[in-house]
Length: 100
Image (cartoon, rainbow, N blue to C red; front, top):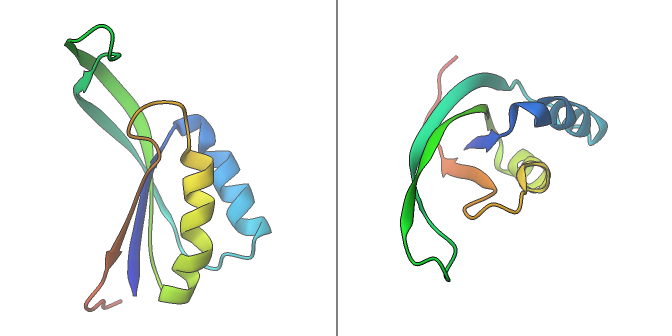
């Protein structure tokens, strides 16, 4: 089993839901508003770091079979893609056990 988590723009949630449904993804997804902050290196020619403002994003998460992850992860990566450094942020973790 795999745990999949993706950090996306809130405006991308509708696209995530529509695309996953269209591709036949059968899973239960949790969607939560998350907040992030940190620092990022400036453009190479500027040579300094700057603090990022507090950013509101959305986290899409599910626990699925290995086979389903092969379908869902590429979809999330494509939707979450942006021109910003560090994007997309899609995490895939192996789950040892789950109870429900």
